[in-house]
Image 1 (cartoon, rainbow, N blue to C red):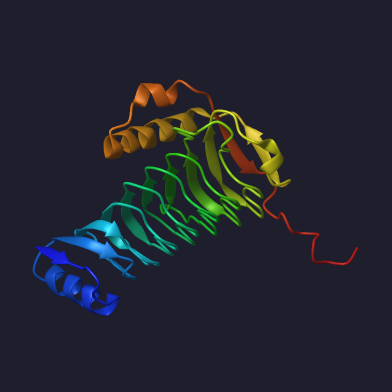
Image 2: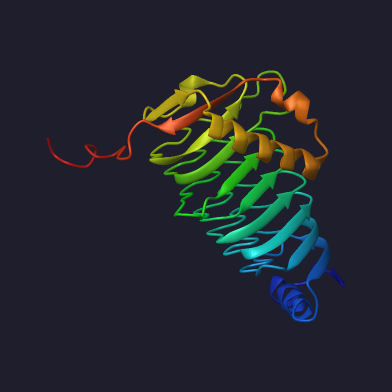
Length: 244
């Protein structure tokens, strides 16, 4: 089933998607022009293909379903998602993966500010965000768990891998970065470490999946060294708001 979004209001587009998904497991939405909330709480076994630019909160509360975007995204994609998969053949706006609790997001190009903010994990639930190019400021802010992979592909001269205040307030999880990066932009609560054998195994699987999604060269990506950013403490603000 193909739905033409065009200039229709987001309420009508989402109603049409919901109606079709009651009859089938896969829906294609074309000519999307900023309509919000597409694929919210999409359940396992359901897939939405989007052509165009979806609006804010696409795939919020995603609950096991799959959404693939052939274009760019606006803000808060994957907001508080519980599981599933998001693949974006382009770039994304602010707050990508805000508070995500499980599932995987693969962005071919770059992510704006506050990607992966408040990511968290619990027992078998472990969220993943893979970014092909670079990220804006506050990547991984207040991150409590999960994995962010930043590949730095195709950066132009002078472009930085990530913006200022990287992982400010981070107290769990890890950020795996490829190649050189601006240490001046790192928050003071971080440590830079070598990858463990377990990290390398996880990274290899995620890079292979990225390459499968976007037809990238796995060997070329893996030629450069990777480092891991982890929190130096689980309580980065322990003394910030208390009197001495």
